[in-house]
Length: 169
Image (cartoon, rainbow, N blue to C red; front, side):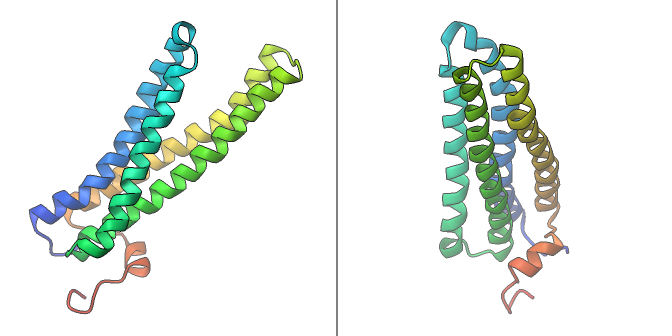
């Protein structure tokens, strides 16, 4: 649904989508690959920094979306920020759940003295692969949401979850 909105509102509506896209694309693809290459020299420190950066960005999205419920005058901006926060919560849950599974498989394989190849195969297949597929899916969804916020549209699901106030409907 297309909404009448100003350029300033559209810019504010795109902000949290852009932060989430930065987290997904830059942090979890580029920085993660860079951290993997640096693991030989610096141990697990680069991976820990990727996790910390991602949690900081996701927390920022959640806090700003929560704050927008009371301080943001535009329903259009609030609606897009709530959608970004909903996806950030989903991603944070996947990040923590699959990250815990990955660590359990990796350290469990080491503890039970499995062969290195078996440990990496289980870790990658059950922990990292589903996570990376979900990252790619969220990237596509967020690019669409960012585009909709740029052109002044609100997804149909937003109208159901966050109906507009009476004066804007």
